[in-house]
Amino acid sequence: MSKAQKALDPKPREENVNFGLDDKARETIAQNLSAILADTYALLVKTHIYHWNVVGPLFHSIHEMTEVQYNDLFKATDEIAERIRALGYRAPVVGNKGHDIVIELGAESKTAHEMIEDLISEHESTIRKMREAAEAAEEADDFVSHDMLVGRMTIHEKTVWMLRALVTD
Ligand SMILES: [Fe+2]
Image 1 (cartoon, rainbow, N blue to C red):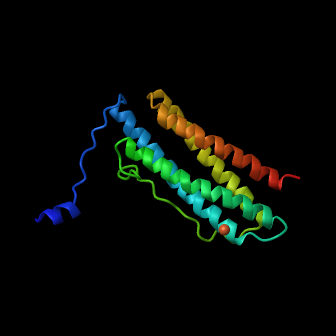
Image 2 (cartoon, protein in one colour):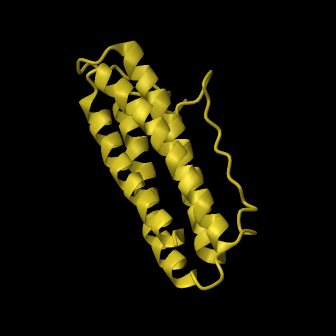
């Protein structure tokens, strides 16, 4: 194999991470973050679909609010994936606990209220997953993942408040 071929065909190397985290805990945290990455992607796509297809008197509010949300979710996917890389794993972590992304492309056929209720429920289930992952990260002294997750939860919880305020009489 020529040098050029070698450069184009790099072998994935074992990434030796040695910054004081237990190896098993590091793997578990990376797996948890992969599940959260999948959820964040699914929520990003759904939020975008609702942004395009919402109709009715709430159109303007939901259209504007979802634009802020999908931009934030897109940045979040990068932040979460790069944390997985910093932990020494490929993003997303696949294998025995693979996390397939289920994207509901038929999500557009809902009323504005149903869209908001659905987004609230998706954000809340993501927050619950993040809370467990943040606890596990803190227990393993992975303060960086813990802080990132707390930051993400802060945004998701605020988003749930705003979504709920839109559809509460
Ligand atoms: Fe747009």
